Amino acid sequence: MAVSLDMGSVASVVDDARRGFVEQFGGEPTGVWAAPGRVNVIGEHTDYNDGFVLPMAIDRACYAAAAPRADRILRVHAAQLGETVELSLDALVGPGSAADTRDAADPDMTPLTEPAVTGWAGYPVGVAWILQQAGFPVRGADVYLTSTVPVGSGLSSSAALECATALALAGVSEFELTTAELARHTQRAENIYAGVPCGPLDQMSSAFGQDGSVLFIDTRSGEVKPQPFDLAAENALLLVIDTRVSHAHGENGYADRRSACERSAEFLGVRALRDISLADLPESFAKVSVGLGETFARRVRHVVTEDARVEQFVEILHQEPVSLPRLGHRMMQSHASLRDDYEVSAPELDLAVATAVAAGAHGARMTGGGFGGSAIALVDRDLLPDVQDAVLAAFAEHGYTEPQFFPAVASAGAHRIA
Ligand code: ADP
Ligand code: MG
Image 1: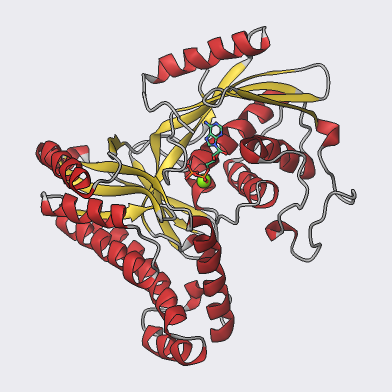
Image 2: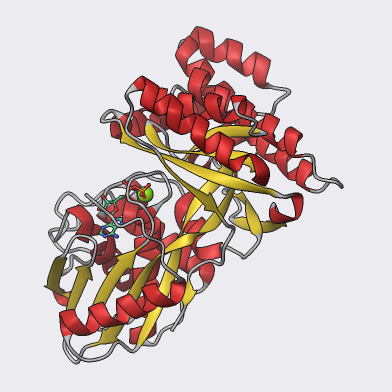
């Protein structure tokens, strides 16, 4: 699926969304809502282990221009695909209906076996469905979606789409969603309706994002602590290197890692791997090695050390002056752990990371679920051309798809923009 990577200014994307709405549906939208993608700076594969993450919302977003309708029809148009889905809100499955096949004991983690729509439309329709399920008075609406978040690059285009849709539906239906409700319900929509077993990281990042901050999130308590992240003051930036590859085994890989974590936690008698401390790790590693095998033990080691690295990264952010080399070192450790212990990297990501650092980046790592997608590099501004050139040359030499680069700027979370 080709998604335009032309950023344009925010004002022009908002104009595009309005104009697109008018062309598609006729009439004017009553508002435009925007929800950003994210990069996770550190803390990967910890969010479904009740652990710590440190994402930031980025200056690329999904925009939803919308207007209410007098009837119960929901129409959603996806500009990048040129496709429209239309259905009655009353036709969405409800509690107790034959089509709601979820396990009553664990309704949040059982995907629907027969959602009314699948594919891309499952994301926005799932949002309408979950909001209705939660008791919000969703009105019929026309929603025009256009996004500057590259799709499937590990920058969370799906959460951006969901959060923009949820805010637009709340706006045209005239009900309030708190930021926490926005994050929670959009995650549930993705888990249940789209059938993707993601943790809370993506939707929380899009909902809670703040200009100039990374978000230190405890995914167990749901507490979000924004941390100042002013790389410009350090003459540095966070460079996204989108490898534009997505390896086919990624989907199974994610589910497999997730279940390995759950089995290990159960075996160790803890609620989640978050409950294993760094001090407990040697003993837990040995136990899991014997009981479940060495591969499981390495999965545990990644999660436990990654949680610790997030806390260390935040500590370094609070030191004056902030040491970019020390931050970079934690990123390198995170990447090595994801590559060697968790085994979710990809040759393209390893090459991007190694090349960026050899060209002078303070550190780099894969970001997002892995198996392709994007890497991020912490780079001094004056070295940016060198790093980009080196990565381009290395990819060309290996015969890989040409990567794409853009700086990630810590940005505001989902909000009404017009
Ligand atoms: P990501 O890391 O980008 O979130 P996912 O696989 O989780 O990757 O989600 C990508 C999916 O989300 C796409 O395949 C598509 O179904 C949907 N999606 C994201 N952005 C758009 C968009 N602009 N228009 C239509 N669908 C989109
Ligand atoms: Mg996603």
